[in-house]
Amino acid sequence: MSDEPATLHVTVTEDDDHVHDQTYDFAASGSEQDDDEKPMNGPWISSSGEYTVHVELDETEFTLDHAEIIDRLDGMSCQGSDDAEVRIIVTEDREFDSEVSLAN
Image (spheres, rainbow, N blue to C red):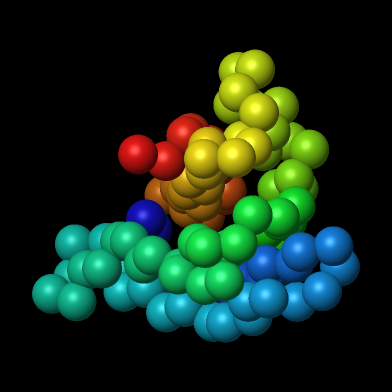
């Protein structure tokens, strides 16, 4: 995370329906309130669907759609009992990165 505080606005959609829309505040990296991770629990935890994650920080936007999530699972279908875990990362330069893996 950056050495400046950050406010991220996160929207999760399923088939164009908003299922999560929230703002998350992060303290500056290294501060006493340094909280560099916030899990987002929502209906997607117990309901399979085609989800898209959209994140905004300052003037920067990042979108990770269902097709890309599936593509990054290296051939796994994310069907049935397979669940994807998506991690959105804000770099020190306040740019976005992401990690996609199968959930445990």
